[in-house]
Structure formats: C-alpha cells, structure tokens
Image (cartoon, rainbow, N blue to C red; front, side, top):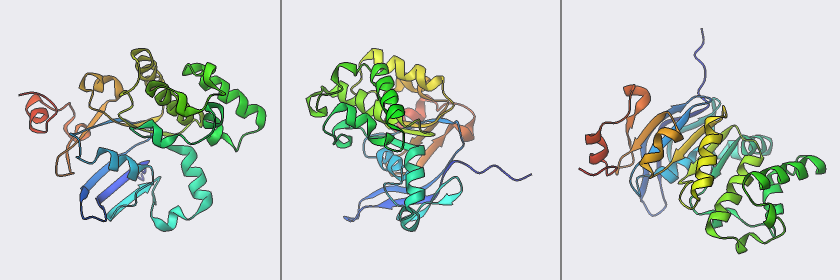
Length: 245
C-alpha cells in the first residue's frame, strides 16, 4: 500500500538571509492532515521563519518544502491558479498584526480574502466572523483605530473567514484577552484543521496541540514528540531556554 503523502513537508530545509544570517538549518519535518503542532524555541531560533516557509512567503535557500507532495519553489509561486488555491488553503497570522492590515475598514479587511464569493455569501461570512470575534461594532472603522487586542482579533477573523485547511499562528495569544484565548483554544480543539502554532506560553502548550517540536538556538529541530512518543523532559526544556533550572 502506498504511504500517504504529508500535507506539509520540509526536507533538509535551510534559510539564509542576504546578510548571511542563518535562520534555519537542515530542517526535516512532515505534518499530516489534521495534526496540531506546537512550535517551541527561544527568540531568534527560527520559529517565525519556519512559519513563513510553510506559508510560501520564503523559499528555502537549500532543501525542499512540499505542499501535498508538490514542491513549492519560485516556479510554483508564479503559477497564479496554484497560488490562488494555496492562499485559500494555507493562512498565516503574523506576530505583529499591523503588518497584516491594509484595507480602509474592518469590513473590507475581513472581506478581502472572500472576493471569490457572491456578494451575499461574502456579507454573511463577514457578519458571522465579526460577531464571533466581537468586532461587529467596528465594521465601518479603520483598522488603525483599533487597540492591539482588537487588531489581533481582526487578523484572526480575516484568516478564519476563508475557512482554511492549514492555520499557521505566530504567538497568537500575545495580545489577546483571556476570553478570546479561551474561545480560540476551544475552536481549535473542535475543528479537523491542521495547525502549527509558535508560542512562548508553555502553560498553553497542551491545549494548543498534541505534537511538540522544539527548535534550538542553532536553528535545528532538536525535539519532536512524534519520534519520542511523549513530551520533552524538564532537562531538555531547561537546556533550550524554555524552563528554569
């Protein structure tokens, strides 16, 4: 029987920036449909870069990233039909929400990724996600007028409105109030969505996902609970700056 193809797959992926700084080194990672992965590591280890590779925003300097078995490279990204399909299926929420917001109103922001829908479907979905993320009173307001937490909720609404297959989140709870964090955790638990969440909130790890991947300061995968069959021990967390000694 043929082995199922991972939905997201990195093979010996390395990323180096033009200034020579290394961000990822020799990353091997395969993520199956429906897996919930939590990405851990200290600042600068490459978590955000890894999420950008998975979102097709950064092409590896070396190695391969494959989505559904197809290599994602500069040539693939020039294919407009593939790009349109990929952007509907895979979404990324950046750590700093300001970098995602560019439309004149909250309504336009949520509706931006829904332009392929009919006007009535689009309006219904905008209203639904504005209500779910408590943005219904801001629909005609400019996004820059929102507070940090409101902007974070708006970014979530924009991403979830397109009903993605893969949700990539970079420190998603950083600016969220406890009520929204609780809602997000419950929402993730109740959906068969594939997710990769980078976080520093160790207390939330068990609720964010079942699989834990740790990146080291030299930008490599040093732990993957899929291989070990259990969570990292305290000594490993201490060694990689994720717990006190």
